[in-house]
Length: 374
Ligand SMILES: Cc1ncc(COP(=O)(O)O)c(C=O)c1O
Image (tube, rainbow, N blue to C red; front, side):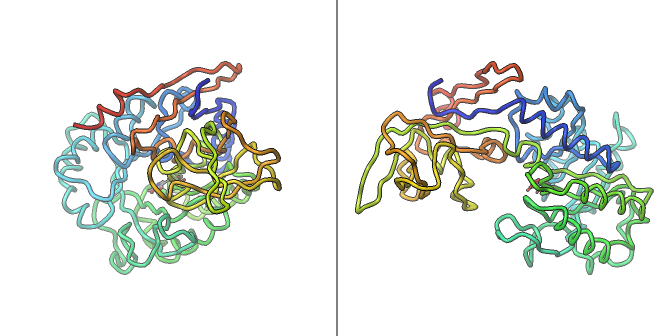
């Protein structure tokens, strides 16, 4: 197989889907998939087999959920507009508004749709429990002044008439103990409103497929919540957890440069284009072929961005042109966030099926680069 390519393992996807489905069953909640972390729709057969539904935060995600998971979606978008609201209602079973002004602006559209439309859509409001458990600001929806969700002081004792659900999202790659803290803040600030609603969506960030995540504690927390509010349907909408450690990016070394004592292995991929979270978060991904000790190398992308490098890793033997490097865990968020900056070759997408056969889902060509531009 020519590099660069992403490879997704059906076996690993299946493992995550089974784990999440079993948590949902044990806890008596609904767990849907956030498309923002994964939109490789040619792998969705694995999700459909388990009846997984999705959440959408754009019309493109909504259409993908309708078409490829073949179900209505739970929508949440920071701001709907008169141009988009109708299409959101057509494709959604639930729709969450980010502010009271958004609800007031589109309430009549929801009511008209529910009166005349082919199905009804349950409207909810996103609230912000202002409980911060995330260290990286760019991933923290509870930063002071955050644009996400309504705070308790604005709502007061009574929800706006017509609102049927509450939504909060405050986690990112978090543990059940982080959820416990956020849930306590949520109940303290919004508990008095729960008798007024039918459902609560606890957002994403529940990384229940990470090694060491205490799923028993999560189930216990969710059961406890349900026993306090037995009339509520509880929904979780993780993204990363579904595709955590289900795929890698494989690249080849195409040159080695040694400048001012820094050895850089240049690859036929790019951090900026093909692993953007490594620069944005930032973090240093695991490389399967690296070793705890040995010759140190910086790895550089084949783009012209000066900062397109991450380091350092060690290798037991000196790297040479043609060596393959496997950047681990490059499915969730990575495959959806890639770009074609510099026009460098975009990695193909390979799906390794349960029987070990490898299917090429996509090979990118010049036309893909050209068609994005005008
Ligand atoms: C509203 C909402 N729901 C769900 C998610 C998915 O979160 P994660 O992929 O961390 O589970 C996000 C991520 O940004 C989000 O903003």
